[in-house]
Length: 172
Image 1 (cartoon, rainbow, N blue to C red):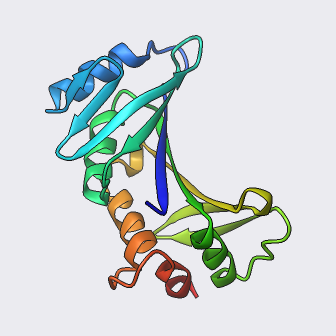
Image 2 (tube, rainbow, N blue to C red):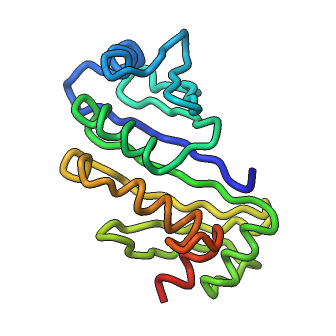
């Protein structure tokens, strides 16, 4: 798979969070939760780490995650979570191609910002690791707007089924 997705759920200050709270929330919304994993349809998410106070959880997404599943997840977890940061990691030739399309000098580490559907994407290049990271934040106010599926579609197909690099042509 040319990319992977990681989600970071942050609970509001002073409100008890943690994996047990997120497990209850996901279970009540129809997700199957066992141990440190939650699954829905053909996608599973695994708790990778947690802050010592449980206020921040990092989930790794496995399976063919689609934007609709990300939207469903965000809609479910944003009432208890303050916000969720979504990270896409591209490696190898996909990272080089994306950097070229963005006119980023991939020989130097760098950061740029792209506005997409009212959301600011942060694009970071790591030439030594041949990697590109695209991230954005979804909060309470954006939770029901299906932003994740729109962004995912642009990242993965450019809205036209052309592939991962079509977003860069689309934004110009």
